[in-house]
Amino acid sequence: MTLTARVFASRAFRSAAYGALAVVFAQALALRGFSPLAIGSLITTALLAGALASALTGRLVRTFGTRITMAGSGIAMIVAAALLGGNTPAVVIACLLGVVSPGAQDVGPFAAIEQLALVIDGGGATRRLSWYNVVGAAAIALGALAAAVVPFSGVLALYGLAGAAAFVVALTLPDLRLRVEPAVEPRPKHVGIVERLAALFALDAFAGGFVVQAFIAYWLSLRFGVGPETIGPLLFAANVLAALSYLVADRIAARIGLLNTMVFTHLPSNVLLMLVPFMPTFPLAAAVLLARFALSQMDVPTRQTYTLSLVPASDRARAAGVTGAVRPAAASVAPVLTGIAFQFAALGLPFVLAGALKIGYDLALLATFRGAAFDSDDTARAVPDATG
Image (cartoon, rainbow, N blue to C red):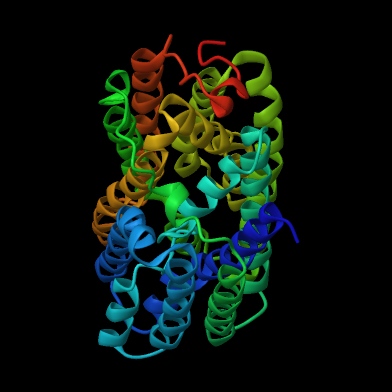
């Protein structure tokens, strides 16, 4: 099995578990007596812990190597699955492990290592990253569908199995210890690029934290009285559309450039997001959500390639780790605010805030990086110019 195939397998197992957990996490806790504010606080805790784990990726890989770092995280998923079925302290401890994803986004050190492995595996980085995200979205969709027919205990069992699978796959990966932490200083012309990208990605992630999939599922149950048997298939369809959009993103980026693809597919999706709470019926709300998912994820593979192409190879480990860490860290703040809004029946406010902030991110990204030049190495030359 090729390196790319092993990376895809790792992503698939993990994402299926994330997708299943996102459907039932908030509702399962609500049935056990947790308030909306407590649920939001736990989501915040999980995202912060995941952000810390991602931020430490470079140091962990330098110290322990790729295999041990990823295998250890797989073991942590198994432990988290066991703890999530326990009492309140056990749930809190599970969320602190850095591998619990109540919003179906990737947390922990997995993604940074996998993306670096895909970038070093020859040319065509954007295409491989597009397929990488297709695999993730498809697995999330299947996990969401599974959550519609299995109980919470079954979802936790799936989470534990995914951790075991990730452990096995991690042991088959090459040791990227030296290649992800090369002893070469970043070139002066690139100083500050990672930090500016991270700041903008933090704004986008903070906005996305208002509408993580666990809260979308919870909102649909509160607003329209639907359960996992209805929400699961909806999120399955949404993530299938997201998966298909990754492939379209690659083709669009080849024509108009990475930056333009990131911005001009993201803007209309954010308008649709703001419209969701104003839909009077579940079918209409579901239709707008599906349209939004069909557009909102095209910036993911293009963003990953764009980030790694703006900096020299010597700075890519830091770029992947830092930009990967700020997203769950920034997103972690919003769920608490969403929980407060839900507690006081302001159910539509998170969607409006998320859409407005994301539009601000799109415009700021375009203004900041239009005309930026890629680093002049093989990966940079393999992707189109940022300005289109």
